[in-house]
Length: 65
Image (cartoon, rainbow, N blue to C red; front, side):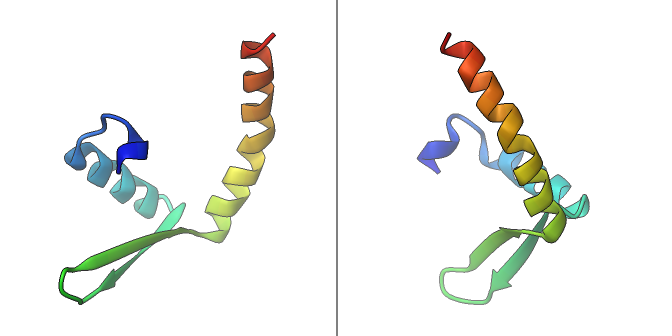
């Protein structure tokens, strides 16, 4: 969770719900002790990520020039 910065647990949960509702991620719940939840990208999520990588590389390049 430290790598997510200062995002509050409620904000994170809200964003994950939005991404799931939009079909970008899937949520899998495991009835364990303690309870466990895993998220993964859907096919659309993978396509979105792959589309964003060139844009992110371009921004990084611009910031470092």
